[in-house]
Image 1: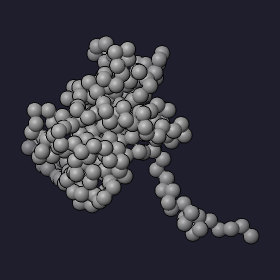
Image 2: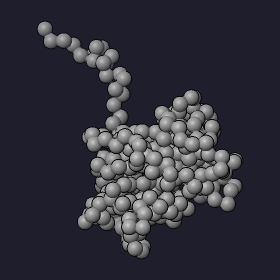
Image 3: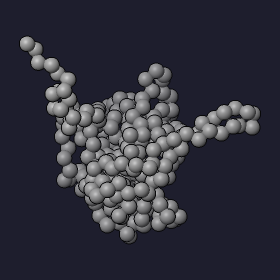
Image 4: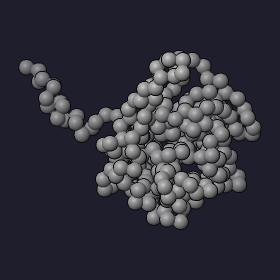
Length: 265
């Protein structure tokens, strides 16, 4: 198997090293793992692409590249430049430093990388490690992902739905904020919503008198209700959420047609 990996924390992030080890186990002795990751941290860029300016890319070693762009840029670079002669069978994005559950999904560059792969017709999985008091001070805070990542991906490859529709399925995986030995297993979950975790702004005046604005996040350990991703993580489960890039609110279509579409006489 040929696997392309990327992330949004940058080429030197420890989570990317964790992902490389996971991908190497999945690819096997005869497989290949290719890395195309951002040269600098790109957290919070979502599905951004560098549409109006070029992206510089540099080869750092065998099958290892850094691109001055977003995770989606890196996927595009991997598919259409670095691996253009023989593309990947699978794209993995992560392992993110921190959770990409609930509303974080909408901002996540990690999820954005997997989304772009899915739009390009490649099976894709985003992986993130939830942090909390039970795992953030471990020698390896990515322990849960490192220990359970390969088995989770294999289970998805063997048993999950992999359609070939226009907006094809991809998967968002979050490992819980617990030591690896305390992980309870996989829970299929919907995307939750933390009602008190909206982003805000905090102003600061620099020593030179300039006014700067910092984006400020909210509490990450708020529960999101039964059957949802963050709730499953806080209960010690690996959450798996099937996703599509289609943002249509399909549940509202029929009602909106009844209200807005005027029948012709």
